[in-house]
Amino acid sequence: MEACCEIILDLENDLSRMKDVSESVPEQLEYAVGQCKVALDRMRKLVVSEGFPDQKLEIYFFKKIKPAVYSKLLYYRAVFEIESNRNEIDIKGQKKYFQQQMDKIKEYMDKHQPKVQYYKCNFKHLDEKYFVRENNEIPMEIRGDQHLLDEDFFTWHDHTFSTIRSNEMLMDYLRKEMEHLESSGKETTEIFKSTLRWTGNKIDFAEILYSIHFSNAVNDGNTTIKELAEAMGYIFNVDVTKDIYKFYIEIKQRKVEKAKFLDHLKAILKRRIDEDDKFQTP
Image (tube, rainbow, N blue to C red):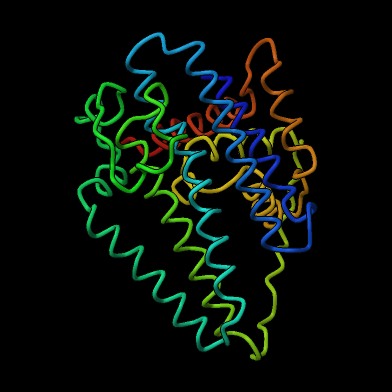
């Protein structure tokens, strides 16, 4: 499973260079789609060659790991189509078009509400049915995509979960584009500038970022570590984006206490709570 995490990190690193590839948005999106396909193919080869030691890990892979990559492929394909269709439309037409796309997403989410609830609530009672490769029934909407129908690399609801995650990202993208169109021509508000400064070590900051990222606590996990590093770095006026992947390698290579700063924070919080409880006890 560690190798799969490396594939995801490599993909995020590749996607972070999208804008360096070309100034053309369609070309950037084509690059992103290509990188997602490469990552999926790497995962498939790994799964076929090594398999899973038990059903628990198989479920985890098809429920969490594969959708983390496959959802991005679906997302960038959808954005590519949207960007291609909006080129010849005026602002009013674009707003209408974006609203239609949001309505389609809402329709899908409503239609698959039980699966959406299962996804959002992280239910587990049907995992053996949904995320084990013994279910040969194939959804109509992906019958034409042979890459996804590989029986060694496919379960029914890894597709569903990936689509839900993709829809969440796509809805966020559409809302931002709508807001951008709404604000066109208006005065921009004063940009927030944080006065906070990170005064600790950068690698400690990276520990916090990776723990948040791997917990899926931000945007349900639909964000890259670099995006998180940029956002948090802006708040604390510290730039770790350049070395964010190097920091992760250094953390992994520690002989003991791999998450030593997080352990330190946990100990401090626990001590403070214990002290407060001690003084408040009558």
